[in-house]
Image (tube, rainbow, N blue to C red; front, side, top):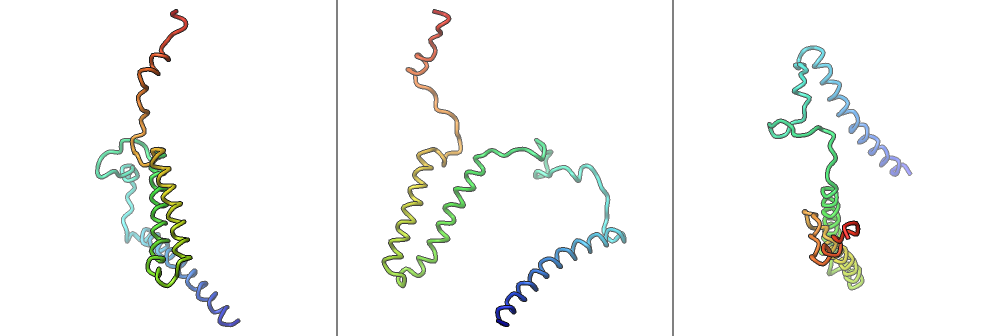
Length: 147
């Protein structure tokens, strides 16, 4: 029981260090500002967003296109697949056929998800609508009022 509580003590010490060091850096920065060891010259230009040395085109609080998030999620999905495949690949000979079947099922599910996203157009960046065919436009352009 004592060894069990000692492990909690180590976690408590690590947590204390994780709080004390950033807090002390912030306090030291404030103290350095107050004793004029660090310059403090506020300027409205300093508070503007920085875009590679150029004037910002838009404001700070702009919504991103959902395609960025979808690409990020797809990257995470297939990156996590590699994280699960690597330990299995390093110990494939030891684990046996049941592990091979499990990883084969896992890979099949991942490939099915990849094929679904590809078919749906999730891997394409340009999401413009395809142009309507000639038969659709001819049927859709008939104006009942003009007749």
